[in-house]
Length: 283
Image 1 (tube, rainbow, N blue to C red):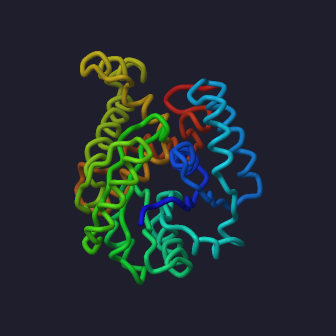
Image 2 (cartoon, rainbow, N blue to C red):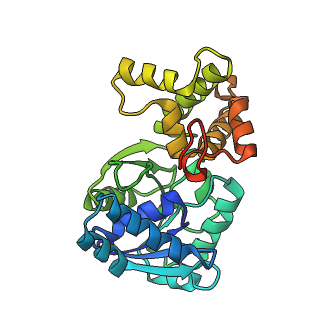
Image 3 (cartoon, helix red, strand yellow):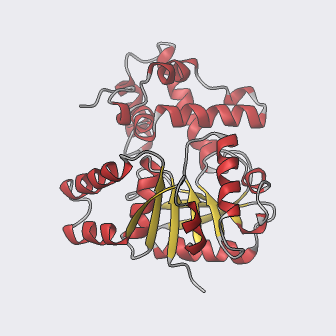
C-alpha cells in the first residue's frame, strides 16, 4: 500500500516547506502547530510564494485544498489516520524524543515515523518508540520547495521495506532521495555545517573585511550560486549553531567546535533572513 496521507509536525520554515512539497503534489497533509496564529502564517507564506511566482495560482489552490490545520496538543489522535508522520521541530534532542514518543503512542503499527533532524542519531531517537524498525530520517533542505535533495537516513533497526517506501514517496514529490547510514550529522551536515563555521571564524578573526568578500571568493572560486555566510542567513544562524554544537558534542572532536560569533549572534537574536538581520540585513 502506498502513502497518500501525511502528518507534518512543526510550522517553522522547514515544516511549512515540507507540507508545501507534499500538498502541491496531491498528498493530503495534516500540518500540526502549537500557536493559534500559525494558520495565518501558513496562508501568508503560500500567498508570498505565489506573489514571487514560485508557484502558480492553481498550485496555491491545490496546496490549500490538501492542507488541514491541526493542533498537536488537541488533535494528536488524528495521527491514527496518517501513513507517514514527519517531525520537523527545533533541534533539541530531548524535545524530539518526547514528541516521537507521543507520535508512537498515537499511531498505528504500520505507520512510518520520520525525523527531519540534521544532526541527531536516528537510531537514538527511534529508541524511545515501540516500533524502531518503522523510524527513519528524512533530511530536507531549505528552502524545501526549491531544494531537490532529501537525505534518507537508515537507522540501525530501520527495515528495508520502510527505506524503499520513503525512497518512493520522495520521488513522488519530485525530489531526489539519497540513502545514507546513521551517524551524527549524516553526510550533508558533516560537510556543510563546518564549511559555514570556518567562514564565520575567518570573518570574526578579520581575514576578510566583510561577509560579502568571503561569499564572493567562494562563489567565484568554486562556482557556487550563493556564498557560505549568505547561505547561513538563509538556513538560520541558530540552525547552524545548534547543528555545529551537536556535532561537537556527539563526535567529541575539536574541529567541530562552534564559532564564538555564532553563539553571540544567536544570543543577540540575529538569526539571519527570518529575523531580518544576520551576516546581512534584510528588509
